[in-house]
Length: 128
Image (cartoon, rainbow, N blue to C red; front, side, top):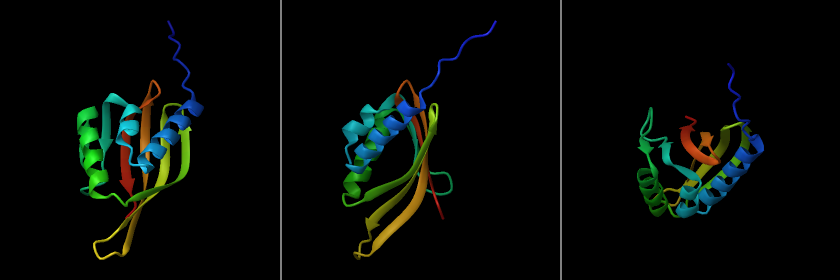
């Protein structure tokens, strides 16, 4: 007895991630959270080596609100984006100003898992 698995639309996944990244770039927490599942999981890049985990809308929202509040000038530049079904990956550069005004940056990737057209997992990794 074989059960048919529903086909997952890669193009739809790419569009969700594009919208998510655009909202993230605007520091628009409302729009970001509207694209995440109720039981979402976010893994931050800090502290090394594994980062901190935030589970559920309330915890993820609180982290993003604090992050954007504490780094209002921070920008994300998104590079390569690809998806296969419900999985997606995006390469990014995060830029900020140090306390002395010097620019700082780090490069990284996000690995996403989507469920029913929303982000269920955002796992972030940095280079270096």
